[in-house]
Image (cartoon, rainbow, N blue to C red; front, side):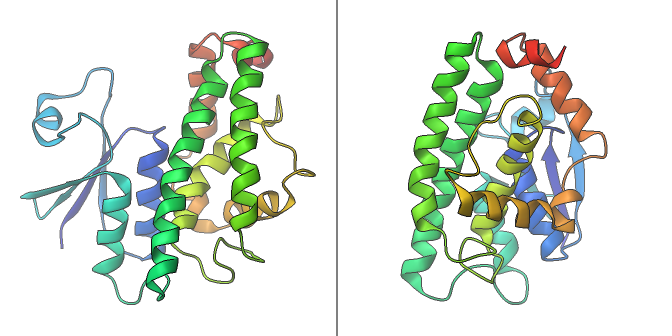
Length: 219
């Protein structure tokens, strides 16, 4: 099966799909575009003008990372989803919740002043209080098994780790289970390999480009 993932280098939603592809050992190729100046061919295939987009066999186009990830999982041997239908539905719900957490992360790096940063941090912390109660004993969301919900949160934790070098976005003492989950995910090879080698520098440059409170801490 010919799979082409269309991306830009900093997109956390694309990273979710790359992690899934790597974990499932599915061959693919990736094409990077500039979302500030997207090519016409991309706009013609992406209904929302967003990434990720997965071209399948050069004919069919899938969009939205959750849909792409479930497709990748379903065409591969085994499964990255719980067998119990209720737990699968719960996982899908918390994947969507993770998307809201990513929006808080975006607000952290775009906040114009310390007050705005604190508001985004408090919003994220409130979500983490809810999330903390849903986590199993670990190391992953459902326990010992790495599933699609884990691929959804790894990009968030990677970005929070970089932000945390200058200003902590959440307290590990307040959220110990989430902190342990983050460490487990960031230690995985498939997570480390899911971004370009220069990701950290690109992300820091992106933060600086926003000229917000966090950018001022970077110097």
